[in-house]
Image 1: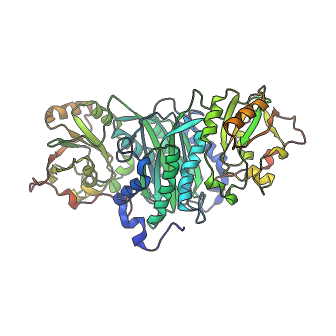
Image 2 (image 1 turned 120 degrees about the horizontal axis):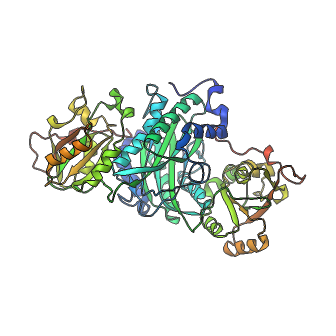
Image 3 (image 1 turned 90 degrees about the vertical axis):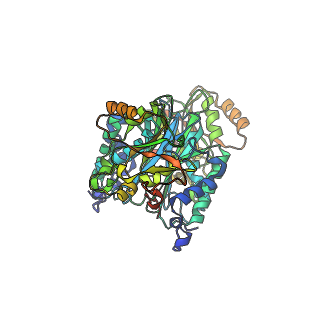
Length: 306
Length: 306
């Protein structure tokens, strides 16, 4: 559905801020607690802690367009932030949403947007505790997600060493054409499980394409020796696309060199029988490049400003 | 300065995301800690708690325009969030910024924006711990501020009763024409002090105009009996403007009915000799309206969508 209308009676402007805010609370339903734990005061007061924080927007024309339903766009806003939290081994404790809207935005579009978001919030128990509404060009919904570690450890991007193994969940590439970019399930359960495995050294989510993102896990002086035939490409997707398309929202992590990888994979399969896990390769010394390894520096992932 | 350029060499697009991110960290300087406590991972990991959270954007054409320097626009982004935190009696522990930019945004404009923001962050000890950059129409910078209570108590908007006194800090109205909307100092010290005074019942910041905001402090069945000659109008500003202009960023609070207001004002003056404090009136029973009271329902504060 196109988000904007020429009929002012159908627009958010016809309602004004106060009525719109009441409607948003109604659309969010039980996912929106009351003040001071929720919307309605100068700040929201969190009941539980918030040691982890991440922020990501969805912007009309960038992260969604007329081909994506309002419901899916709203769901994506929360899910892409949950994916970042999953990558640290965290669980959500609350979210705030700043909405900047063209006054011609359709009310029924916005209703579906919030209903899609609320469904994800309910599934993952994320209270929507605050927000802001302002007039702006287009549609920009920015969500800040707060969370807590699920266990004793937070997994960061640093921690890998020479010969450590590189793993990725799911399949890569073709996210936009397959609809995966708004239909994916954030890997919160997998992230929490991985953070509990002491053999796991570092982790991140793949959002800008493996070629670009894997650089963040690669220690100085090393390179990731991974071969093209190991890549878990989505059906109908070639190696270049699997490396660069972006919006995979899968978990990329490293395992200590001396780990029994077969036993690790067995444990994974017993925990997540339906989630694919692939060993991509390992970190080797720079300069020791062999012919079977992908030259990731030749592939360019998603650049946010071009 | 106009934020956009036709010379692509001067634009953020010429740099791309990675170079731009490095530049932003440089501009933020010591206010931007390193990962995992700062930018550079999927989530930021907070060292201190975050029981309070608020979010507000600045949008080009709405909250600032070509008449406001980039430096002042960046400062305003953080200050308007700090004002919300002040209104709860909180202190800041960290902030994340989601930036949506037209690729033609001038790099030197953005540099001044971040320098202005960093100066405020340094003054109020707010680590900028994370963020996101995306392409979007215009300029939308959304800041989520995290904080902690300064004492045992968080002051909310609820808590006032019949005959409680209504106070406001500073002067009201003319914020845009006087430049106050970007030059103000968020009343963090005053907010923390007020939260420690047990006689203070409720508090908020005045951002949409007193006429609109005071409704949020008014208990059901009561009305605020305040007279026009008590209003602390900014020089050259009439009563209507003082009630409705918005962007005052002052603290509005209530004091228990039986408080010795003269002694309270003396204590205030000794703590904040340079900050004006005005008793506006008190809450009375609805229906007992007297002729000297302002009919606030006839004044309309700032509406965010119209």
